[in-house]
Amino acid sequence: MTSPAHEASDRAARWILRQEEPDWSPREEAELEAWLAESSLHRAAYLRQQTGWRAADRIGSLGPIDGEKFDRPQSPFYRRWQPWAIAASLALVVGAGSTLIFSDGPPRSVTQAFATPIGAQQKVVLADHSKVELNTATRLRAAVTAHRREVWLDQGEAFFDIRHREHTPFVVHVGTRSVTVLGTKFAIRRDGTNVTVSVLEGRVRVDATTDAKVKRSTTISAGDVAVVRDNAMLVAEHAETRVENALGWREGMLNFSDARLADAAREFNRYHRRQILVTGKVATDMRIDGAFQAANIDGFTHLLRDAYGLRVTEDGETIKISE
Amino acid sequence: MVDQAALDDWFCREVLTLEPALTRYIRRNWRGPEDVFDLTHDIYALALHGARNGLPAHTSGYVFAIARNHLIQQARRSQIVSIEFLANLEGVGAPPDLTMADRHIDARDELRRALAGLSALPPRCREVVRLRKVEGLTTRETADRLGVGIDAIEQQLTKGMRALTDFMLGGSGKVAWPSRQKRQVRRSE
Image (cartoon, rainbow over all chains, first blue to last red):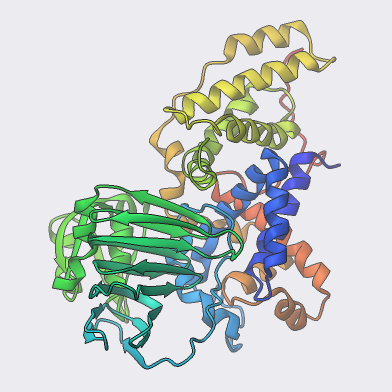
């Protein structure tokens, strides 16, 4: 009735479900790692289930389906991860860290907290004269004193211009990870479980502290981009153009080079309450190049209509793009 | 040694996207459709294992070479396979031409696919998956709401996840639980 492949897939599915629960523990994490290390079949089955299950996250963007009764209140669990589930649904799923829920404890003696609403940006100067620029929908807490420099990027994206101070490293906590610098310019973006670090000047050290026992870190320099997810890190070296594109928001611009329309739309959506919804394979996979003003969502959709011949229909807060 | 994270990433991005082509290839070259799931996983495990010391330059060539060797080996091992079948298999082996659609199944309209996959689930299973994905309920919250045990919810979710995974990766969304699926078409033996 069953086979090793079916058994491994069932087991993998149960691991993934467990990982999504709020009480997923380091002990379970260790057990999972051990199970994965047991055989390539276990790992293959796990990666396959995880990829497929995450790919189906799009369902979450729909809300109610089929006109069934959905008048129930949202649970706290929903509010914690749902808004990011869509962004995190791409097939790039690697490693096996704790998923979806970050457990960054409240920092002691927080001196300052900053937040920007959707579509807004804010520049702030910290007590050590380091400068931080917050992008759209971003929350940041800072504890900066003479002996300690720490900030927590709870949501969104920020650019840091850090004052050099010999013996006091500047640490940015992003979920379970931290980025440590002495003095440099870089940006960090938090997208659900994805963390992207783009370095403009100097060097930064990116830690993966998901597991306190296994301290792993990578140092990246100017022109590098690191994408971290769960326990995995991908580093693009000498990616100056990518860094430049990633920092375009500081000038209010969104820069795309060969980006899928669906991804470009998702970038615009970060800055607006009105949301672009791209449907259909041709439109979704259409490639977009160029620089656009983040604030000008209408300019972008009009371009899609006039230059690319796509259908643009507005329905309340949703702008639908189709062939 | 390839870093585990890089290996996993390669597997998810490059190997899993071959799944529709790979299962089609196995179906075409293997007489028992009930074995497709197991064979696919054997091939995945071999591909992962073999790439530990270096990622292949051409993933599809690599994966289909493994597939071909594995099918031949399994056929040789199996006592009931006739000589004609084996000859046939060794002749066929060539990896298929991969269309863009095969390679970019993940880039397709995921929402449409996810929806179709969801609606293909049995009603009870669908409701449990919906509560998880749309309303974000934990297993316990789902159990409480539906008034059933946690075990039952876990079972439905596991089933739902497996079917949905199959669908999202380009399959029919019907998980081929062993010995349940029957096909009329059998290779001549």
